[in-house]
Image 1 (tube, rainbow, N blue to C red):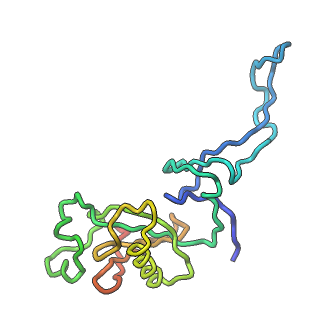
Image 2 (image 1 turned 90 degrees about the vertical axis):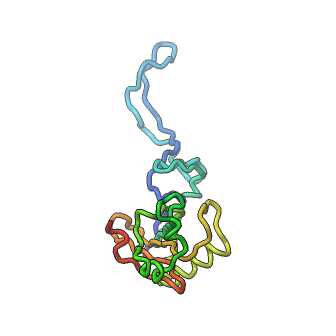
Image 3 (image 1 turned 30 degrees about the vertical axis):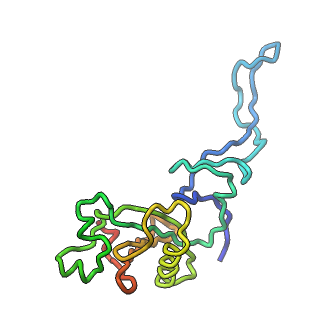
Length: 189
C-alpha cells in the first residue's frame, strides 16, 4: 500500500487551506523605482507553503502549524460520535434507552434527534467491532480535548466512513446495553 504525505484538518478533515507563499512579480516602475503596476505575476516561487508556516482550514477556520495538518495517509477511516440533542423534544424519552426499551414504547432511533459531537480517525486495520470497543473505552476513560459530550453510553451513535468521503456509504452503530447494533438506514434519511 502506498503512503502519501498530505494535509488534513484534524477538526473537520478539510482539505483546503489558507497559507502564505512568496512569489516574484515583474513590475513596471518609474525612474525612481516606485511601483506603477504588475507586468507579470508569480514569475517565480520563492517560498512554498511548508509545515513551519501557519495553516488555516478554509472549511472550519482551525489554525495551526502545517505539521499539525500533516499526516501520512494509509488511508484511515473517519468516525463521528452523535448524541441525542439535549434540547430536542424527545430527549427525555430517548436518552440512555436501549433498543428493546425504545421498541417496547413504540419509539425508534431517528437521525433528526441527534447532533454531531465529535469526529476523529480510526485505523483501518481494526474491525468495526474492535474499533467500536476501543472508542467506547477511550471516550469513557481517556476523553480527548475538544470532546463536549457526555461519556459514550447507551443511545449514542458512532458513524464510520472511509476516507473517500463522497464515495463510500456511512455505517452507523447504536450503543446498546450490551454491545453495538448496526443501523442500516442511518445515512439514508
